[in-house]
Image 1: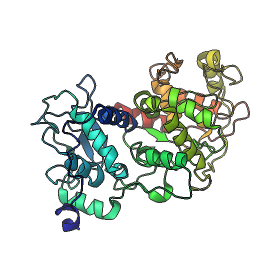
Image 2: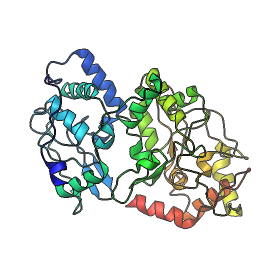
Image 3: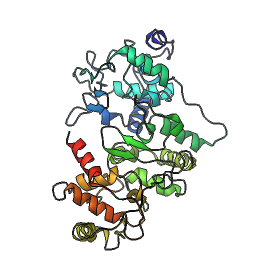
Image 4: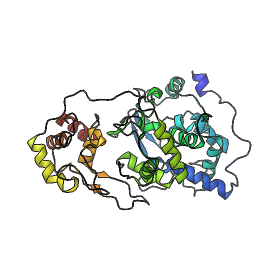
Length: 406
């Protein structure tokens, strides 16, 4: 396993260095692909220089710090070649052969074609160099060792460039390429095992987002975030603006729309929509909550009337184009209630996009409502107006509030 993963890599890459004197068109293509991969979000800390690295990424195994992608010769990728960059994307290896931590999603980026990797490299080499040394990761033992990474990769990683499906049309294949590759959607929307690897058998079937207290809903189940019965235009609008007649995005997905998908071409957004709509609805099986439906409480009803009804309506009907309806809302009825608790505690905000620059938001209530009150109002919402979902317990709220505080 060690020799296979940490030994010399197979020769690859083009003889020409895409980072040397690239054409303006190649740089422009790379800038677009960087948007598609949302690269700047992870490689730019709050208030820091774009792509200069240093953003802390919390994982169950410790803290990972993103690397400097600017063309500084000492601290960035100024001494890299296109082949070095391709190897990082495709094999998850740094220039010196060191195995990279899979918080950098090379398990998805391995699908990216070499031409697109070359364009990305050309764009990054066109940036202004920023001298900022990379910060060492703070991972717990044994996860901080190359030997552990080699073992992990032997179990869970195999380099493989995307292969088109000849039985599918061009839109489907383009959408599959973006979702599986640069979009790395499975990084959030697929359950991870105890060692942090995604389960390919449950691809895009949803899962909790480690360290973030959010739940990335299933993209294959119609009672979560599946879009198999949506019109293509509605899917495109949601990815482009963050809102549609059927849903809106919040939390981590709002960041994806804000920094990435709103900038994609209509053709690519349609391709993603085609692919997502084609996902089989029964891949993960039914995910029903076997607990008894919630019973309305007087406390929850009083809190709703005081705090919520003026926006969401006396009967949970909402206001079209402004405040979402709560009656029959699948985000309200999901078995996993993490997102509901997050929105009530910390507020809910759709992204301010070019197509929807002034979205309505919901204020946080963590200072106004204690854990019992939050549980009561959510239980009321999940049991009123024909909704039939299990109650939210005070312990559920306490767990999310305490974890967020840490």
